[in-house]
Each structure stands twice: as C-alpha cells, then as structure tokens.
Image (cartoon, rainbow, N blue to C red; front, side, top):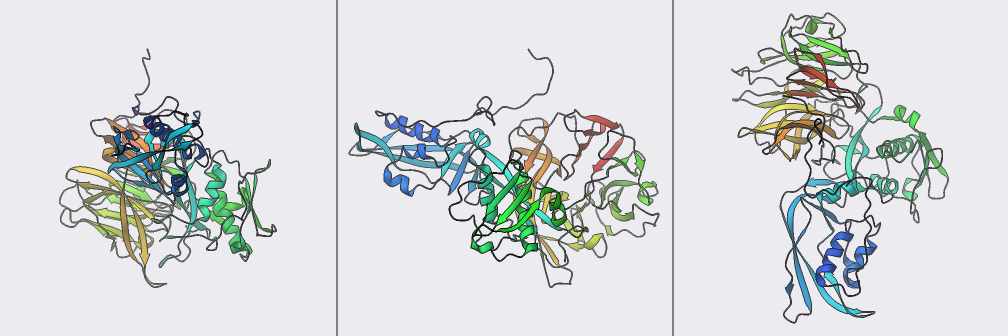
Amino acid sequence: MPDSGNLKAVDASQRPDSQSQVRVYAMPPADDASPVEIVQGYLEALTSDDPEFAMARKYLTKEASKTWDPTVRTTVLENGPRQGTSLGDENESGRSFPLTGRKVATVDKEHAYQLDDAAYNQVIHLTQQDGPGGKEWRIDRVPPGVVLGQSDFQRIYWSVNKYYFATRSAGSPSGATGGGQEGLVADPVYIRQRIDPVTETVKALLEGPTTWLKQVVDTRFPTGTTLKSGTRTLAPDDQGKLTVPLNAKADTANQERCTEMAAQMLYTLQDLTSSGVEEVELQRRNGSQLCVLSKDRAESVASRRTADHPNFQYFIDDKRRLVRMPASSGRTTTDPVQGKLGSGEQPLRSAAVSRDEERAAGVSLDGRSLYMGSLVSETPLGKPEVRSKAKSEEDGLSTPSWDGRGDLWVADRDPKRPRLLWLDQGAGEPMPVEIANLDGRIEAVRVSADGVRIALLVKKDGKTSLKIGRVERTGAKGEQPAISVVELRRAAPQMEEVTAMSWAGGSRLVVVGRESGGVQQMRYVQCDGSMPASTTLPGLTGVKEIAASEDERQPLVAHSDDGIVRLPTGAQWQTVVKEGSAPVYPG
C-alpha cells in the first residue's frame, strides 16, 4: 500500500491509461447483430481513431450514411450516452432507443469548445433492410454529429492554439507591445490528435478565427485561402520543413504578407508538440514558392507572446515593500525594487509590474489608493492615480493588471459603486469600462498579454466564479477609445468556488478553487472553459494568491500558509520567504 503521495480524483467513466497510449479500433456489425448490439457498436465506433468514421457508417443505412455529417458537432457528455429500453414500432419493423445524459460541452464546426450543461435527449431509430445473409438491422435515423463521454473526448482530442493578429484598433496603432512586432493572439480549438493532426490544424487555421474571437483579431491569409485541391496530407521532411501548397487565393500575397501568413502557421504548428515543424514554405497554386519562414526568424515577424520573457518575479514583503527575485534561476534571495515602491515609504497591499518591468502600480495598504511608480529611477510617487471610496479595507481596489499594450486595469470593489477602470498607458483619467451582462461584483482582474481577453473573478451570493470576456475598443483613429467587455463566458465550471487565478500562456490559466464538497486544489484551465486531463498541480496548503507567466517555462509562484513559494518545472513547491503576499509576474 502506498504510504505517501498526493490524492488524485478519478472520473468514474475514465478507462485505465485513457490518454495517448490507448487506441480504439472499431469493429463492423456482426451478421446477426440485434438492435441493441447495433446501437452499442455504433456508439463504440464513434470513440475509435477511424479517420472518416467508415466503420461507424457500416451501422447506418446507405441513406442515413449519406446525410450524416460527423463534423457538424461533437457533443461531450459527463459519463457517455446512456442507452434506454427499446421501443418497437407498431408494425415491429423498426426500433427506437433513447439516448440520454448530461452535457459537458459541444465542439462546433469551427472546432471551438463551448460549455453546455443541459440535458441530452436524442433517439436512435433502426429499421430492417436486406443484407447479404438476409434481413439485418441498421440505423436509419441518427442524432446529429458525434456523441462521446468526457474521458473519451480527452483521449481523442487535443487542444491546439491557432494564432491570429490582434486587430489594429483605436488608441493602439501598432497592436504590439513596444518591440515593433505585431502581437499574435491564441485561438484555442480541438482537433482529433491521431487523425493527421498537422493537416487538420492547418485546415483549421485557414478557416479563420472562431466566432467568439474574430471581432478582435485578423488573419493575413486572403479570404477563401485553402489547401490546393488534391492535397490530402501534410508532413514535414527530415529537416523539419513543412511545404504547404495553397490555392489561387494566396497567389497575389506580397512577401511581407506571406511571411506573416507563415508566422501564423509556424506558431500554430509548434503547439503540436509532435509535429517537429522547424520551417514553413508556402507555395502558390502552380507549385512555385511564395515564401519561406524558419523558426529562428519567426520572432522578427510576429511575437506569439505579446510580452517579453520576464526577468524577475515580484511580491510584497513583510515590510510592505515591492521586492523581486530572479525569474529563471534557482536563487531565492530577494531585493527591494528600485524606486519609491521598494522603499517602504508607501506601505502596499498589492502591486502590478508593467511588462517592460520599468513601472509598477501599487495599491495602498488600506486598499483605497493606487500609485504609479518608476522601477528605474527615484521619481516621487505623486498623487494617487485612482481613489476608492470603499469604507472597508476588505473592499477597495483589486490587484491591478497590465495588458500587452501598456494599459492598466483595476477593479474598484466599493459596494456602493463597483466598477472596472482602465488607464491609457497607465496614466491619465481612469475610464470606466462597460461590461455586458455582468451579474455580480468583480473581485479580481487579469488581462491577457494580447490585450483582447480579460479574466474576472465575479462574486455573487457568496460564491466566486471565473469569467472570461472579450475586450473591444471602438472610436476614431487617434482618439481615446471606448473600452467594453462583451460576451462573458464561464471558465472552470467544475469549481464551485474560485479563489485565485492567473494567465499561464496564450490561452491557458492556472486557477485555485474548490469543487462541490471537495478540498482546495490548483488546476490549469483553457480560456474556452475546457479543463484538459491531468492538469492537477502538486498540493499546497491554504493558497491565497497565485502568479504565472505567459512564458510557460517559468515557475508558478504562490502565497500560501507556508509563505511565498514557487514551483519549478519537474519539482515540488519550494519556500522562498515565510512572510510575504501578492506575488506577481510582469503583467
């Protein structure tokens, strides 16, 4: 019996070794298969690694096979479809079987994951038809798309980030982060991981951004660009070069636009860890070269992470100063930051460091004032940039957050006037942000590095949930834009209470929370609400705050009962200092 190690929750429907080492092969229907066996065989065939669902179609009549489109929708059920009792037709020539279950999500034709907790109620109808050996049962009416249990979905599908350029909007002429490069935005989708994932990922990229994100991103591929007719599969050569033949829509792209197209494709394919793509060559319809882009040159064209790799990790020490420690070394010694925020002259409760690590915004100990300070000079703090009228120290201003455009965000949690505020380049008059369909009070704010998504902890009726919204900027060019957050959607739905969160990649967050009836845990979640398998992190007692970098190689940092701790890759939690709070990375 094991006498040490962490506890891990196991899904009752999960098969042993249900991840990459398991492959499922569908079997054809037996000659004398009963209606029950036909339905069971069909449902099992949907969980196989059959590229075109050819085996699943053997359970359908020819007419049903022609009309059934497995790509229209994938419905993910909590414990798989439950098959009900057969209902015979009046003339006994047909059979109907109800399929029921509880939905977790659907994956639409765009490959986008969408949470859905409604009941699933469908019917499969069978009829008898003439076969080689006499009468045989086949399905003539089938539910739309594919239906799977959650554990099968996690085994079959991969979450892949497609990359598109942030829209050049009002108040942000470059869409970049100060380095002159265009910033790329991650658009997560799900593809079948063993069915030619390189080709399927390229096709998904060419189809354009998903509906939820397309309002704030652009693709450099001309409208209507697809793979050249007749292209069935794509694979890199021995040197990692992938040649992609495109149709005539891409023929007129100039060199600059083509290299941007190639950057989108190269970064997207690098999220496929097994792809081995080091270089992309795009070809015209006639087979001539359009452009070539290598992995080494991609950073000069576009930045996948719209923030530089951080130099330091930051937190508030026991003297209420902003201090820092090296981000990429094992050294845990800390030093006060340069400038007034590191002097202790103004006691701090929390802080946020700009992504260039030259400025910081600090919230006063009583939570009512936000100060802006330099990290490269001894410039005086001056007057507060934001003031809250909250009476209780438990309310007041949240920890601020910088986006990749250099703008600052903070929530005022004053119960009488709760609001989300935006400061253009971290200065000037705080502007209230309109939030569509916000139901509750914002407790915490984290803006993604790309600046087009915002994560909010929203409290209602004593419970706090994680919401992801899309940031839209409108207004005339050269004028200060109007900022709004739209289409809020829930993430981490399995957690009844979310207490802390941080962006941890282009489309990923790390969250701290508690499931219904469970204990506190930390997990990675996708911004679309999906929670990939095996994302539970090593246990830690009493986590109050968490910080992660968009550079996924950097360790997590947390404020827990053990003080300020961090989690290097492949290691356990290590204590940095016993006293401290509010850990943050730049952003």
